[in-house]
Amino acid sequence: MKVLEKRHSNFPQRLEILKTREEKEMASESNLLLSQEKQLNEIIANAIKNAINNHQFFPKDWMNLQEGAAYANVSLNTFKSFRLKGLKICEIDGVKRVSKEEIDKFLKSHSY
Image (cartoon, rainbow, N blue to C red; front, side):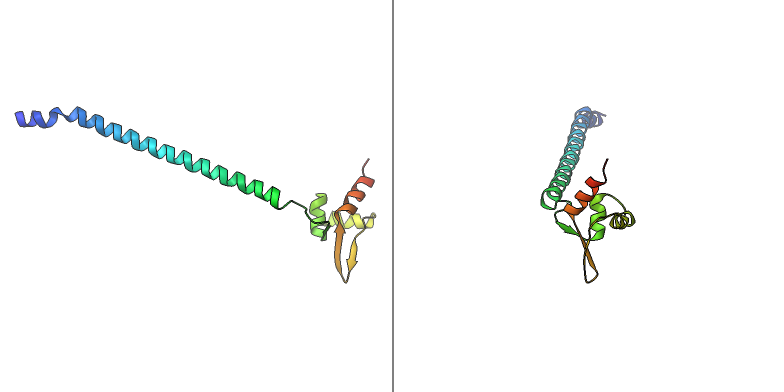
């Protein structure tokens, strides 16, 4: 009986040690997740900054018709109809290009 009492007498201390270890492990895991989330947010923010700084959305002075439509924020069909309304497009051997300057002029001249 005394042997059993000795064995179990330190049970509360052992239980407290286990609880403390478990709490430390949980805190460590939580810190790890927060650290990973922070790193991921930094990676995403840097990628967005690089995309904006290094690759401007319309860096070219001359664009194909699809790029021109995207620049004007209209569909390709609408952009093609702008040609009938006076938008100047350069065409050489079937290759069509439009300048950013021409698109801006056209949109300004049709604004009210």
